[in-house]
Amino acid sequence: MAESQLLILDKNQIQQRINRIAYQILEDNLDEQEIVLAGIWDRGYKLALRLQEVLLKISNFKIVMLKIDLDRLNSKLVANTDLDESHWKNKVVILVDDVLNSGKTLAYGLGVFLNTPHKKIRTVVLVDRRHKIFPIATDYVGLQLATVLKEHVDVVMDVEGEEDRVYLS
Image (cartoon, rainbow, N blue to C red; front, side, top):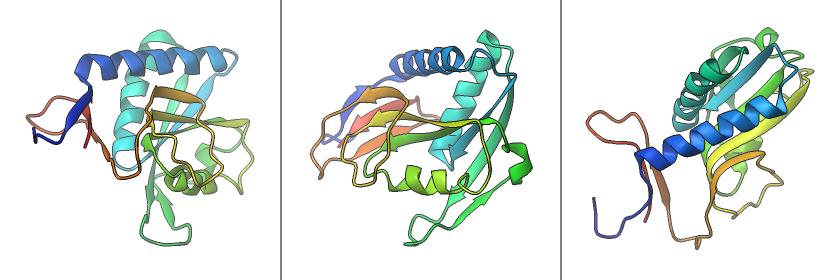
């Protein structure tokens, strides 16, 4: 670990937050038979997979996993999904990403669903930095963190040989 990195969440703390978010999702969707976990590639999708693991243990939901791959360098919405819209039409969609900074990534992720009817859309982030420039609200948050713009939040998940963790640098 570099000297300029401060450990914010360790493996156990990340799992505790994932568990809590999963229970919040369950409580918010008790009457649902099926939900869609839409993870923004790649760390948002990895977080969605972790949520799926917990939800399968605590709920009876059928869970559809959707991967959203955004072109983050494009100033226009350019997104690809691994499923067609029939998989999320008229369902509860839960959009998942690792860190909310400006809100651009989540706003673009929401754009994927705007032309398809759905029951509701909710958002999940592991860390909310609260530097939004887009009108994005987070419904389920692991940690709200006050940072300065120059700081960077780095989420490490599913990297071979490394434990899950969140750093501030």
